[in-house]
Amino acid sequence: MNHKAPLLWIFLQCAAALLSFALGENALLKGEDSRLDEFSSESTVPNGVIKYNMRKGLDLDQEGCYLQTGRKTCLEECGFNATAKTIFIIHGWTMSGMFESWMHKLISAVMQRETEANVIIVDWLSMAQQLYPDAVNHTQSVGLDIATMLDWLQDEQQLPLGNVHLIGYSLGAHVAGYAGTYVRGTIGRITGLDPAGPMFEGVEDQRRLSPDDADFVDVLHTYTREALGVSIGIQQPIGDIDIYPNGGDVQPGCALGDVLAVANNFMEVMKCEHERAVHLFVDSLMNKDHMSFAFQCTGPDRFKKGICLSCRKNRCNNIGYNARKMRKRRNSKMYLKTRADTPFGGYHYQMKMHVFNRKHSDDADPTFYMQLYGARNDTSNIFVDVHDDNVGLNLTNTFLVFTEEDIGDLLKIRLSWEGDAESWNSVWKNIKKSFWTWNTKPQKPVLEVRRIRVKAGETQKKFTFCAQDPSKTEISPGDSLTFVKCRDGWEVKPRKRLAM
Ligand SMILES: *[C@@H]1O[C@H](CO)[C@@H](O)[C@H](O)[C@H]1NC(C)=O
Ligand SMILES: *[C@@H]1O[C@H](CO)[C@@H](O)[C@H](O)[C@H]1NC(C)=O
Ligand SMILES: *[C@@H]1O[C@H](CO)[C@@H](O)[C@H](O)[C@H]1NC(C)=O
Ligand SMILES: *[C@@H]1O[C@H](CO)[C@@H](O)[C@H](O)[C@H]1NC(C)=O
Image 1 (cartoon, rainbow, N blue to C red):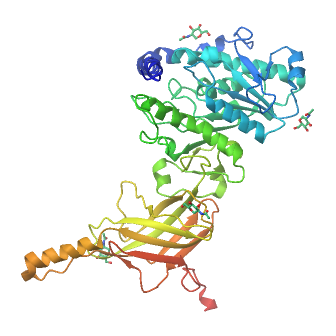
Image 2 (image 1 turned 30 degrees about the vertical axis):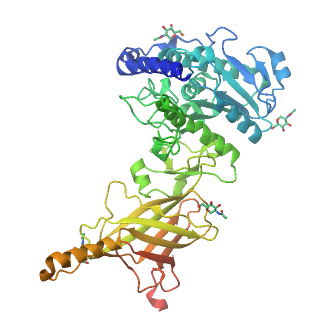
Image 3 (image 1 turned 180 degrees about the vertical axis):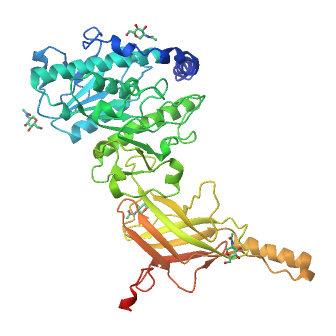
């Protein structure tokens, strides 16, 4: 029997509980607002249930060292350095009751990047390995326990809270939110890695991670696809910045076909997309010299059309660990596309071109591809995705082109119209054969593109590309046009009359 089957069974049990809860029973919880006040400022969890495992070395098989609120000797034993950064890593709901493999990757990436930091795993596995609604109910007391630890460190070691960074995955993100609520003072930063959605979506600020929980709250959303009215990762923006890689729903490399196995496909896809937030964060710790940028946009559709690639007025930011602090703005949503694997970062280009309808193209609905030639490398043919729309004729069209490779400075663009030139010829032949008396001419569509305006998202550089051969600007199915950087005189620059 497939050894994964029991796991799937457990998952289905949990999913059923989760869904029934999300669909009905949580209505009961929502009315009950008094629970926040019931908590005193002291932790209610018995000592030792939540463990603070401070990592000592890169060797992750080593046990590490345990901190305990009120036990000074532990601080010395663990070599806690109150003037260095302190980073807490908080896991989420668990079925296995064990750390998943991402934990080791994240710890090792954090420790390599911040060699002097105190890196502490908040181990609340026993409280997280329960039915989802019970685990949710525990986030508050775990958050309070962390706050109690931080308050003690402030008293005992004059730990500056500004140097504290909580990184929480899934339910752990909301645990971090509660810690930020209860702690005396303001934590420096909280990072939410695909914060859990069920029972947190749409609830008031104090019951989930929110911008007031730390000086800077940044969130990565990777699995916000909805099924039966709930999504595993929270959809709504809940931080100072909220980054939705690949629109926050379908992550490249996680599709059914990409993930192996049979019976547990659904679960693997779920895990792949939910956990992608962690891997993007690890990537940002490891690949400091190739940062991925996210761009502010009102929604995924506008982003996919290439409309939002501006960095003006803080509209773009690095993702993951390298994100720069920004205060909450009216629209905190940011987007980017990524590759399917590490390094996840790629290159975004906004392409603008006016497409003239020259002949017979009213219904042509052209399929364009672009190939980019750079100083370092060339891309393959990239489909120009117009997302449900048709290419607008006699209009300026804006597209997003994403390349996985760094091609260096863009030198040349080849625009091709996918379509069989032959098919037009054969249509013509058939028409001639059957209707030769009509003397019909083939209705071959002809469009014209004179120039392409390009903006590179990563460098913010703008160029205008003109037809390499100024007499060749018309294109039909099966044809291609080549554009190069405009020479003087070809570039559209407003000229001062006086200078002429
Ligand atoms: C503690 O951390 C600070 C800041 O990173 C560093 O300058 C100092 O050397 C560290 N102290 C010890 C004993 O490692
Ligand atoms: C949540 O946990 C508290 C104790 O921490 C318990 O008293 C309460 O009944 C729980 N609520 C639910 C809905 O499970
Ligand atoms: C575009 O303009 C041409 C004339 O320049 C006209 O014949 C054609 O109908 C227009 N097409 C559309 C879709 O507006
Ligand atoms: C150019 O890109 C291709 C993939 O498109 C890649 O296999 C190749 O290694 C790249 N070459 C250089 C010099 O980066």
